[in-house]
Length: 451
Image (cartoon, rainbow, N blue to C red; front, side, top):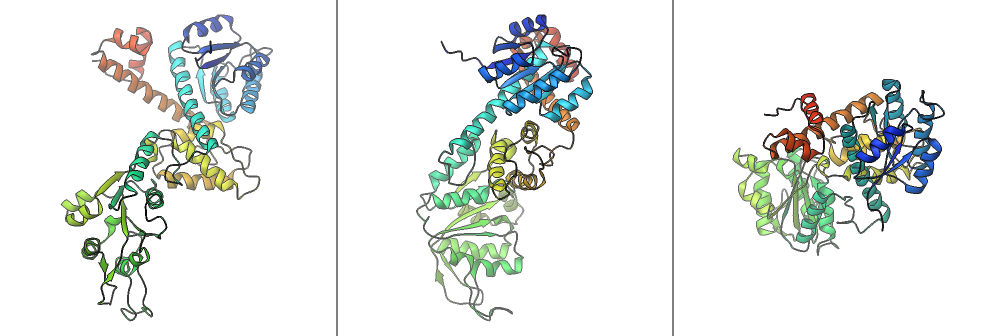
């Protein structure tokens, strides 16, 4: 019968602790190794996603040299492995060195089975996400909407909505923060539509001065204003038979909104300085990061125009809300930009993977892409590090981030269990799989109100 339990490799020379961990972690297939040679043999045989590693291994049980040599060998053989250092040897200095070498986390002995179990569980979760992202990247499946890179359920749902409306001629409004990929989705919509052979024309309405935006959209006749030396078609005309993408449509001034509304209703335009009505057949796709309904209430956006451009509204989640996408996108951009720089690293160090996962990405995909560009230029080692991405300067900052992240996750889990158990410590402890004393300690440490 095939063993379906996740494999956890425990590298530990204390026989008593070996037995304790094997007994405690019955949700995993626990493989024990007492020294470096046995650990590397187990790595080759089982290829575990997560390893706990004691630094005090023979022949240096009272030091850390053999433990660090084992860590280096494990990560060299399997860079994606989540190695959790569990040691009491010179804890602060060892923690810095271990994290800098690529360890996923550091746990100070003596071991608390429940707390270490939380760390191990999260390590398996992150390892699973990363493995799925690598599988998606390597298999190169038919990506939704062509150039959209995602594996997150939230974005796959958005892609499905775009694909559903693409063959129609309804106007679509894309809502999302700056850098979330609104233009990528609009191009994907165009490519999946019946107008795919026509032009795709994009204009950022917020990037053009108000006095020039009308001419950019509608074009102008020769002599319409100073500098108009020839008749020029606007973006709307250039999109004839295709798709016009109006990015940041919320930045269009009110007087121009009236003219845009007329075009959408009647499908005719007049160039600036012209009197001739010109018929234009183009599909409108709009996008904005603004709250248009609030702008309507404030009198800054026309309600009738809103309903014309928002026959279908699609909200795009921030990158931080797309589970697993940050790593997938980092690897995608890394392969792209490294290809133009011979010798540039094409893989992330474990510390960089952790930093990417923990960063909140306020600038969304645009920020991520810019950081990868920088990293490809700045990196001088075989792997992209967190510092190359400008996400962490020291091991200490990464450790603090991991600790805070762990505490936040524990706080959410305990609060949910306490709520579900109506405040019963015994029931909550049973739900969480920890002892009552451990739960009491966690509640006190995390300052959770138990009542």
